[in-house]
Image 1: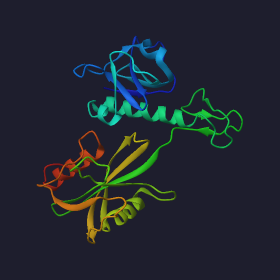
Image 2: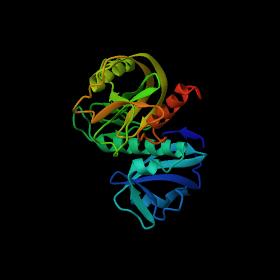
Image 3: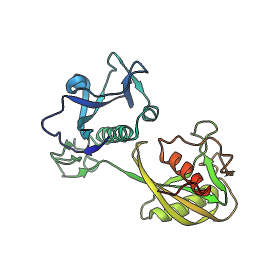
Length: 272
């Protein structure tokens, strides 16, 4: 499935459209759980929409992000994370884009400089203040993720917000004036008290919770004992690659990073 992003609708519109409709922050999926999320006639949700943004075309079918106040018959609201786990990777990516565009639109209805109601830019994905000309584009918050390895072991940690029994790679947001690499070194030291070397870029993923860009690395342990940061990390430990705890599913970059690193350490694969 090929996605071509766009801000303005292409002409002519496609007879069917992918409609990513959110009610109270949840994505609408078909009421029948055995019924696939699929394109519908283009105007199907227009009457319910409070806001509507064009996203582009997925497999040459128009994609729209919409917010609504009520759930129509035949549909059910599902938490975005749970919905994304049911989607293919291209569909998951567009759903994530839809959620971020709608959240940006929701929180920038007024100018952050002078308080004037903003308007939608004619050509760009932006909101503009008609009074002071301040322009606001969708926000992205860069964050690093790093999987630390030592021999045939991985350093995994869990936050109190994780599902019971699930551990993952370390992660943290980049601070102002900081490079991604500097962020990796700082966050590892702060969260688990160890030092690392041989950083290796793995990949990136847009993550709509709420508007992150995850940039993932692997790194080799250089020294130090694990001392978990009490207000951030509930537990952290070294795990043999043959005896891992619960880890994130593959729909997240963490799930890919951990599984692919295990394959590399076993001599079965290579990093991206």
